[in-house]
Length: 246
Image (cartoon, rainbow, N blue to C red; front, side, top):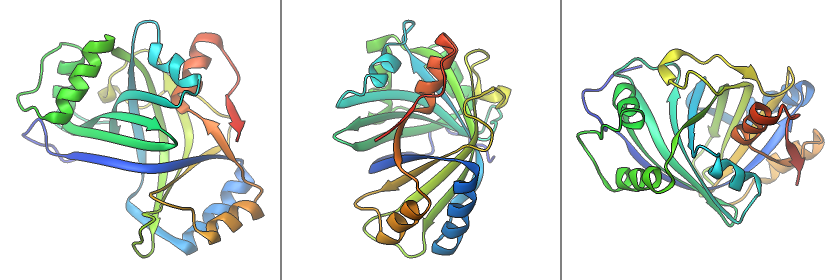
């Protein structure tokens, strides 16, 4: 990764609908072959996503999320691959209400992020989104809670459209509840059975007809699934993977 001499070098806001699907090995092979003909690789087509979720000592945010309320929010620190001290990481608030996902995030170096989240040393540069993050941390009393890592393949539209369609497919999803530092690698316990993939369809408006047909032909149905939520349950209760058809 390229480093940065600035605490902040990227700010973004997102608003979209998201649908999730659990694929077995056969479904994944069939659908991915089809996506290769209908879509193009995203700007960053493959890579390892690493996320540390923040929560209260009694896991308030995760418990609320698993109750499937009409409104929920989470705060996480994300990197793409294992960062060094001066590589960029992304601190982001993710909210969901009325089926729409809103995400607001800022970037800082991994060293700055860990100094802030563990040592309570604020970065030298601040802004509106940082103020929102800082308020959320202090309001709830959030600490580093859980790390989730996985390999991701990302697709984008062949031609830009108002749908802004994007598809991601994750495999080898793993988690850990100790050694919560992005700089310490992406090891962890496996979350789902071997060969299982998690696909997310992200769109600003609608899912195109060709994709709906492909899902039907492969008998793929949307599910309610949370990587962090399932990892939390397995960490505390040794539960089976939690995903429900919707």
